[in-house]
Length: 168
Length: 207
Image (cartoon, rainbow over all chains, first blue to last red; front, side, top):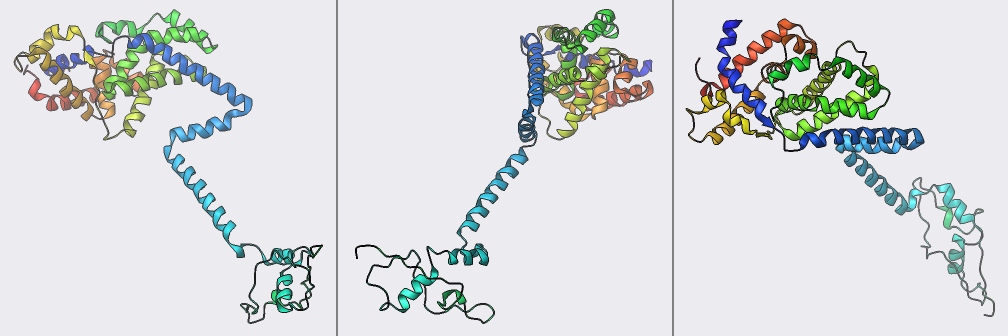
């Protein structure tokens, strides 16, 4: 072993250079303060945790430790927003029963428009107001080859309601 | 200022054990001023070890701070089977090795300045006198080559060289810190020196 030590004597002298490497001046004066500040900050975080704010801190800590989660979270938010917009703008997105229910409402009737268009002469002299859009008079074929009963005034589900403006 | 000179070796083996135990007891009870004293006592050696392992001041700063913080948080689990210093060293070493494994192939040197004494160190003067007429430039070049060569070693081999040849710790202490037997320490040291000698052959004088 002594022979080996002698062989490496020159190397050991060179390695002595490492001992002369020093950090910036004043570094060790500030080091304990930084460590203690971080320890106190950790204790503060623990007290917050006890107070019930732990989930927020953990949430933020996950973002700090794994930046990829920030991207994933942002993507999922964007996706949710897009889905919301798409579903909000799709007219067939609502179920048929809900559509029927809205049709049955006495204030605004789908048949109101159709009946007034089909028989304008039979309408009273007063101004008739309907909030429904203009519909095609042709019945819409359904997927199963049956006529769409929604636009047929004879349908038992449809009830016509007219509004009269007084004074006309 | 010279960090962790071999002369400090005796100090590392028994750094005022009574005081240290008392400080550790107080720190375990949550006394931050006692722990502040422990930080002041060991900061230079812990920083130096981490710095020599990473060859990067910023990384060494972060890792040394985190080591002290982790030690404080784990103080309640410290059973006193070894000295606080050895236990703290183990935390710093494990943290550094884990960091270096993650940093693999992304090593970026950020070397500290050399102190005034380096220019007058007779061993170093002898090493560079034949190389360059400008002593300062020679030392800086030597420093870069030496750190680059150190980074080529595997983490366990680099650690043994740092702890023994730079920090001046004994084989026994290194074995306790690295949790291995003395034979392993010796063989790692021999292999690491051989490797370094090969990397730095242009800068070493034949004995």
